[in-house]
Length: 277
Image (cartoon, rainbow, N blue to C red; front, side, top):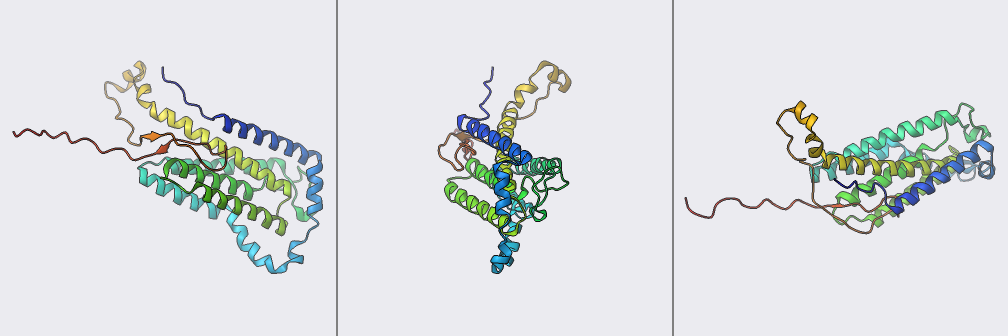
């Protein structure tokens, strides 16, 4: 009997629990106007464009970085290069699954919670707004985290620490720009980051679960009923399967856990006979 792999190790489970509890507490605070909402109202008094008008043009340009029209193409390019190198569509498929889950979850939460914008002066929910959680911060965390995950799994000696620092810096800058432009409450931005982290965990679990199904495809085809339906023919082995060795180290702490590092398959032995005909 084939042993099922662990979808999340202890660090991943700890992050999953922590992010879930933090998001639940945050949503309770938003609905009940708790301490964090009072902080929202206090910070909203800051008029960044009026106090520092010289940064207005820069903030408008940089605000585009947090949008999916910029980050998704970058992710797809990275996924495409890694997939082409290892002759697999898996990185691109994971990226597309990420885009779908991000739009469905964040978009659905925005509509359901209906929080008002800071420009209204009201932090009420169920008011017809579409501001919580922040799509900018959730997109930055999820997209950046998936890039790190793909590099950790498919690239040879990737600069994970450097990429992690870059992603963290861009995410922080996105949050500051949103506060400067008064496009989000602070709790919106925190909520978006938490949702992005949870969706990243979901993508990783999906990858590991479906990878096991792919590796066991031949086993399922050996089932008597499937053999009767398919006849005596059997599919060939998975052309995308690769050799892997466990590695240690990685970025984003336990959110992006260590995964098997993909290495090139060794060349096939020369089967030609050494004796003259």
